[in-house]
Image (cartoon, rainbow, N blue to C red; front, side):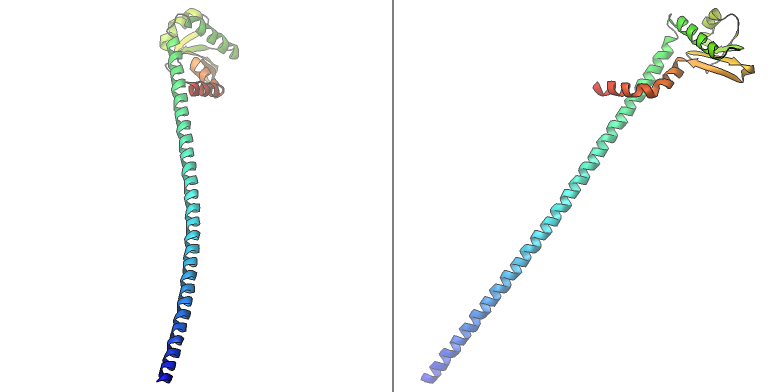
Length: 186
């Protein structure tokens, strides 16, 4: 029986050694798997953070563009309103007592450009003033001419238009930066 006990102890010892070895190997496998999982998690986390930062950058850029576009649209809208107001005010000037002097200068400037003038065209509302100012040429009524004159020559084939609104249009590009600055300050 001693031999049985000895063999049994040896077998038990061998079983314990195999179990210990299996536990060590299982522990190593689990640690390796945990390390691999941790590395994978860290890699995915970095990738997601990079994607999130890129998305945030795109969103900020998009918002900046949208804000700039809104400012530009607001500026253009304000600019358009400012010039429309100016045009309206220029038309209102035609009813002021000082307009007689203004119309006189507009006529003189246009006649200087067209020395062989045959007629002067003005808006019907301004015809009576033009007739008082010009006695040597025919005064024609033209609804298309507002706030100024059109001097006609060569049977109507040539001429020049000199109106307050035309002057405003010619100055629009040079006035735009100043108007824009004034609008942004208010």
